[in-house]
Amino acid sequence: MNIHKIQHKTYFKRIFGSVLPIIFAFSSHFVFANNTQPKAAYYRYYSNGVATVSRTVTPTHIRRGYEVLDQNMYLIKKVPAYNVEKDLREEKQRAIQFERHRKDLQIKRSFRDVEYASRKRNDALKVLNKQLRQQYILMKQLQTDRSKYLTVKAEHILKKKDIPTSLETNIRNNLIHIQNTRDSIENLKKTISDQQEYYDYVIYRLQVM
View 1 (tube, rainbow, N blue to C red):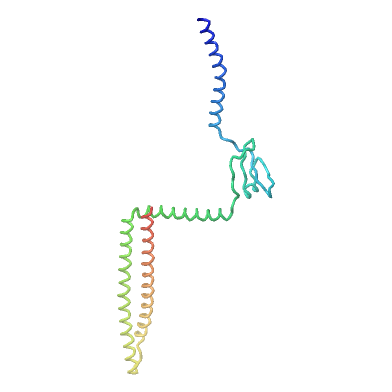
View 2 (tube, rainbow, N blue to C red):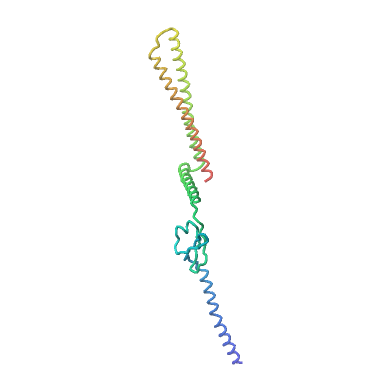
């Protein structure tokens, strides 16, 4: 009975001893395979079906597109050919996005939120519209004065009297003032339109941020 137990233990040790190295080797290989990434060793491109392999990436690789290979010449990944037109389009788009982002940050710093921007817009337009009304009042007065000056001049002509120099001066100055006021009115109209458009844009950007 004792001899049988000893033989059984010896047989178990022999079997376990032969299997253990296999288990260890398999486990080590599995861990190694999962913790390592293939490293690029070669770069290959094709020209008219002919492969060219090198250890560095050349301008030709970039222009034609190439394959990244490991030391065993197994494919790691493919790099598409460089597209100048596409890159320029993307660069332009990136520039547009960058500029928009820069303006958005500036808007956020200046106006904070929609409520504040709306209040600033209303205040600005209120001042500009007041100035516009004043210019219209001035224009009406200048036109009334011009009508009086021209009436007096006409009376002098009908009576065959000499036209006073002061009257001629008033008529000339009045015309200059009318033209200047007309220009001011047009400028104010444009400024009001520009300000309205600007604040509309500011409020829209604040809403979508």
